[in-house]
Image 1 (cartoon, helix red, strand yellow):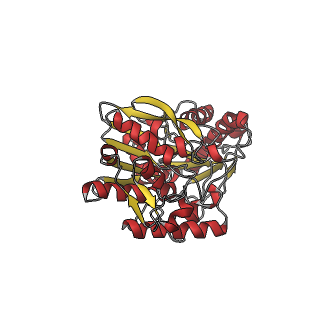
Image 2 (cartoon, rainbow, N blue to C red):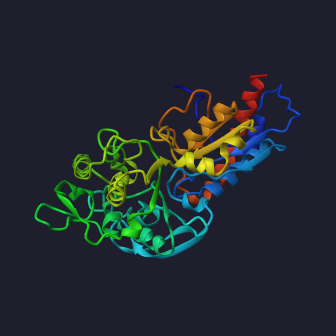
Image 3 (cartoon, one colour):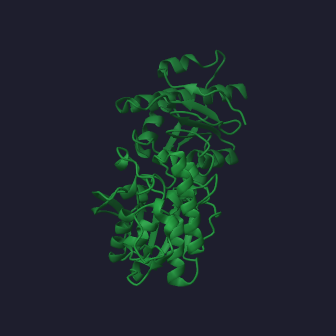
Length: 399
């Protein structure tokens, strides 16, 4: 599907006003605007992005009624959108190096909200990617800690991981050790899973393994195959074409050993992490009913009351660092634009790059390269202003 040509975020708000049609007359009715972006990775968190985009919009539509709704899809920063106490403790990163990571614990709800990216995120190992040897052990440490504080429900936010280990690092942290046919422990990471024969469960942390699991997937991709964890996410985690094939086969073998269906939607998130969690929960309960793999963006949207707020809006703006084929598979931009289109609101997507077409009728605003972090605020303000001009032009054209 095609859409309006992406706009460039290089002009000032004054320039944006000059872009209005000569016969444009502002509607006396207040324009209701919802700004609901994801974070712009490494550049701006969702709270800041929403504030700066809104600033740009208000420089053009001065009398608008605007609401900021920071969003996330299960990636980095998702846990911060939920209420509770922030807990910080020592753990390990995806490469096994000592680090610190935080999660949110809501004692009243007996629920812990944990970003996999907090301990096992890609930025921490950008210097030395670990697609074959990286593991989720550090995230398992956070899970075990949360259970000791009283958590009976673990909400794992799956985006932004550096690993493709099928969640086996978490299993090790919780006492379930993968062994080969000779009974020897496997090497860390997804690259060794092709040698998996069985798990030693003699020392499983039963209380932690028995919790209710809610896995917020940032995509709908399956665990294996051409659209699976290795093929879709492996290259961005540093995997070569040969390593992609190796890890894909290893995850397929993990699914065979555990009896987990690799074709389930969302099971490719976080390097196939739902595979290990599903096996562990079934081991504890004899059923998979205590594992819920759900859309991260839709879950956050529901928690924020986004659908109800969009229903009253004329103009909805969302955004993310890069809009590509993954964006349409459950990311924030696609979920927000879908809700906006259902409500009949004009929609704009802001991104640093567009590598796929946005839905028909959606405005696309290119904010430019975000490499200069000091300029991100200015870029988002300009992009917000440009989106506002595009909205006013569209409104004028529609009469």
